[in-house]
Image (cartoon, rainbow, N blue to C red):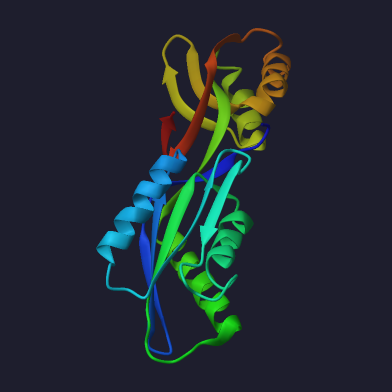
Length: 216
């Protein structure tokens, strides 16, 4: 996997109204089908008096597991449109339930598709979506002549610097995406004429959550 993939880190909820029908979307991160089915059952229990509790979920880095349900709505008007939003947004390991309280007016096939997709987007908008990537922690020791070059390289490559310590030398700690590892090491060594001391950590999955590094 050379690029990151998006997941729901914290679920959220959103609501829309269409011709007096209420559509309540609830989103939750899930790691397994058991997680998803338990969440769906909980939502059906919470909204037991609703006409429909439609759902969709995707699990796996390559969306290996995909499920959806119209829960009594006309076939293809709810679950599949909800699933399409998750796939289009490239969000993984997420489940969503859209609860509908019928308002007395039929929306028609097109109206239902639009309403369920809009509700799904509203729920996702109110969730915390992050991008997980593979990478390695890199620690570079350099003299004061080399720090400017390293900062320039990191700026060009959009590398996140975690810490910079200034003593008799400068020690820079950064998180490097796995696909950039060889390129960064080569650029740093060339930029410092081979004088930098480089130390790599082990490969991890990481993400920045509200500008803070989280390692999984």
